[in-house]
Image 1 (tube, rainbow, N blue to C red):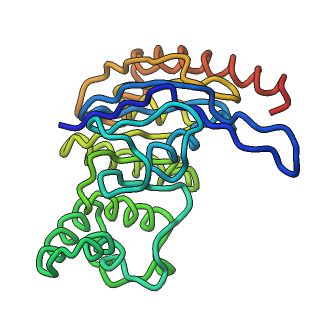
Image 2 (image 1 turned 90 degrees about the vertical axis):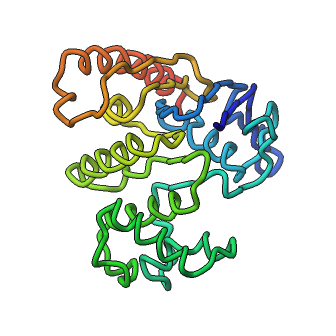
Length: 262
């Protein structure tokens, strides 16, 4: 079992050309249990992505620390898989080669790479596209490949930074169902950054709301909707209750951000 602990993590960026420093993230803390699916909501520029990048080891906090199974996180590692909003596949590699990239770097035997890649290609619905290059794929298919690549390395934690933000509404809804189905089957621990309230409620078992910049986690709301979740849950009274509560939380912070000129 893996446990992620974020303890008082803050991030201050130095000023440009002698200017005042910018506080992107106030000291914030959250404990992530094994198999948790936590969505992080907040107004634009509140530090959601900064927090996720610190957990990934892509950025360094100026205060606090991140612990994974009791060990401090100081750099990227295979125990954390990251999926970004932008399409980050290697354009010169095929779908299968992209999925196998991390496995190859770890020295996994080719036969095992083939088995793992075939499994996740099937999981994300890309059978028949194994030998296609990214430029031949739609945005949704590229994000499916990126998700399969992250899962193929069997990370302890899956980190997703608005991975469906660039997709059209219909494709986004299908990708939400795909990811949720994979989580329900495998119970990976997930931190999911989004600005979409409906997405957060549908996907997560806990939603953390961040304040306006400089951000910190101000509220955590447990989402007690049964699994497996069907898309029709979005029309239920329970879903509407959570949406009303989170909409008000975000509205307050968005107003604050506008007043501060964020």
